[in-house]
Length: 172
Image (cartoon, rainbow, N blue to C red):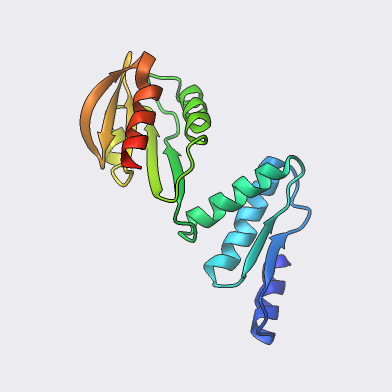
């Protein structure tokens, strides 16, 4: 109903539209509903301002809004982190490492747009994430550090977060 309503009003009136999905729900469900609703409208060039409504901390609403805008290419700043799903080739705790990296990199504020990949295996990781500005791919006890899909060096497991953070700061 939300999407159809905004489509109809955008056809009938030439006014700025504030779009959002009211009462979207919890962080998980609300993020999905807001991403689909707001994302569909923005993709179709409908909407001038957005509001993500989640049950919880309003900071989460802002973060989800930024991610929606970034995923559509409408926000050209900040660090975008991509990661792979786990599979049989993954030799690292990808969930733990991505959570740690996400927390660490969220402290860095930038007006540049940087894409960082965190991949679970060195077999496919650098190739699958070649669109990323830089990234890591897990191995047994070490990671490959890569830039634009090209491996630049190996990094030991204990210092991978520090090394990745240094590389992000170099790009900035």
